[in-house]
Image 1 (cartoon, helix red, strand yellow):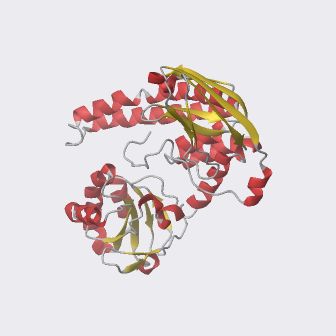
Image 2: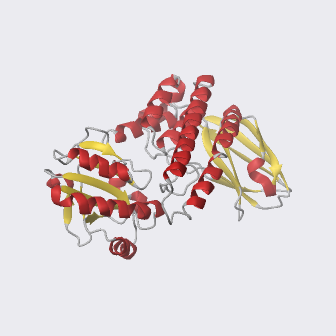
Image 3: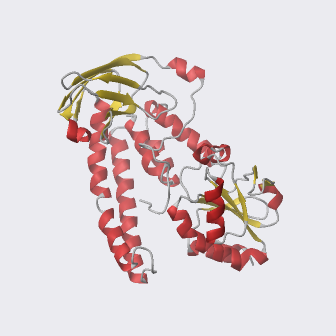
Length: 375
């Protein structure tokens, strides 16, 4: 349950990678029919789509007196969205082979009943458990915002401990709930989908590895299972002991190569001008730079901005006097994809040999680690 991160705005942030032709040929396409009866719906356009890049299907049809139907073929259960043109509300469900029936009301589409999709039944079972856990977070954040005047002042130690203990409790509850779900449905594609959502999008490598090991072969080899495998492959590039390297232009157009900084401790900091948690953390990073730069500490800021003016203004306003690089492609940046960056801020600390010795150090943790390694 992490608050201080920014993620891409999509319906569930999923990892994009393409299956090989051999994998694709192994899947047998089966027919599906999605029929809907939505009260209050007139002759309006209805969309069925997914943000998925591998099995992407986007379909649309016009409802007639509240009824509509979609037909097609699919290789395995996948998470899809049903949406009415011009309306904010949407319904998420697992599209799979067979006959699926959707019943509901136009003004509460997200509460519609989905019949004929076992994976959706399992997803709803998880959603009920997750909502009970997530609902506890709101009061915790409101209490912390109250004592800190919405971040303007530092929380007293006792209040910070109450908040941190509460968040740890939610993390423990989430871990237990996911573990229980996968133990109950080890072959379900919903399991790896949840692992992606809870332990990959909000990085928790220990739980990601533990829960993935509990999956059956069918779930591990599903689209979402294969994504977890790909995530792990990419994560190894920035895990402890890894030696990442890249070359990218700085604000003046000069190419900066990470390996040229060997001999120094280097913080590689992925951030963006539009990311509020990044900007909130920047003063702490500035302080670390001021304290340790003369002792062999360097920073390379990698921006996910797409507009150079905004990027440059943020650098100047926040007083970020170290090296800054970006290809101004945002989430589509090659370096972002290569290193599997899914949230910002994300950072990793390199030792003098260029090996990763820590990840995502925040606030005092960054200072303490630098004190430890820079004698």
